[in-house]
Length: 231
Image (cartoon, rainbow, N blue to C red; front, top):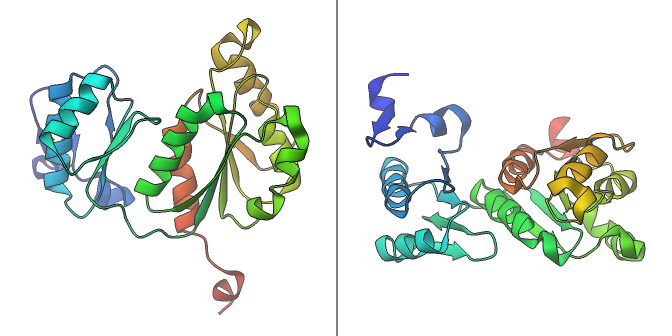
């Protein structure tokens, strides 16, 4: 990497060449950063990539206020605790974000916004946990039309196995830190998903809606109809 591909703000060295390498610009992870640092990084990335929407995740109330003051056109997702600056891309393909319960909403919302920022269309299927199995069974027609599935669940993390047994769609499972004491902050859900007996289930880290959104969007963007592949 040459110096011209790095923006040095003093407190951060931005990888401004990432969009050329991967198709997507660097993202601002807000946790642990001050509001001024987040604003500075978002501004530098937006200047470097005005054609891409800039995404900032895990924002505090103070950071959200600072982003809105600096960038009145920024879009804030209060549930995801995230912001975008710039126009979202025209969606390609479809990602379905499936969540087990309302308590999983912040992680699911992060996955939704990330997938959209990374260029996928998104449909949201909420509150279909295995405690009411009929709810997820009723969504199968929606699930099978997606190019990729993101399945978000806490507690014992069983939902991805159920969904993976109902469809042949690529699936990324997201364990959340939701649950009682023996869930160990999402570890039980993580281990349950890693030990899924449903084939084709891949797993990201606990509460990592962002990582799931990136993966699913890239799958959806690269999906091709069968007849096009054989042309």
